[in-house]
Image 1 (cartoon, rainbow, N blue to C red):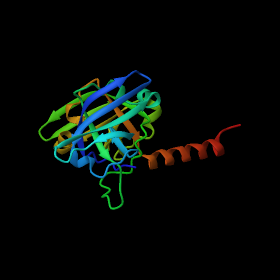
Image 2: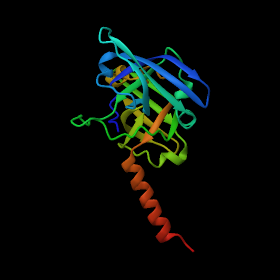
Image 3: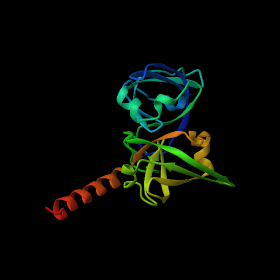
Image 4: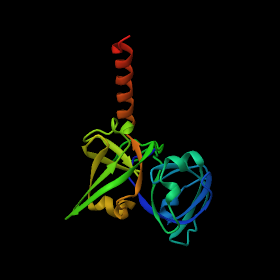
Length: 211
């Protein structure tokens, strides 16, 4: 479980394998590896991944963490398109006492959205994402959505797109600051919204569908 508050960016130093199975190694400040254990969950670009190895040298400012990624994850997220030298968003899993500054995020990505437009102005960035219509019913104006693991508030919505308004701090702390038109971003819809929409649709179908 995560909050959608990205803690830092990690540098991809190795990404080997094929389109069915790959091993990802990232370099990150050692402070984000404190009390880490093999088998722990870390969100990378919003994807919940299991730590298979890590190296934290107390005498060094940076350490490394390694993850195995299977085909189901590769085909549903943007992880297959990352390259060595890219920066990915990183969030450690929630612990008791963690401040829930975003919203509850599972790290289970449902789909990806394509950046169709970016408009920058002083202290503001409006990003428009195009999303398959089947997922837009879960994207509500002023609702929550996790984008590359970052908990964000939805702006205006259309039939197959929605806007995000990003503050400078978000652009600085996440890899959304270097995202460009044409890039694909991981999307996890708000689980409460998903459950509500699914429940209402099922009720209407059961009680109002003409025989």
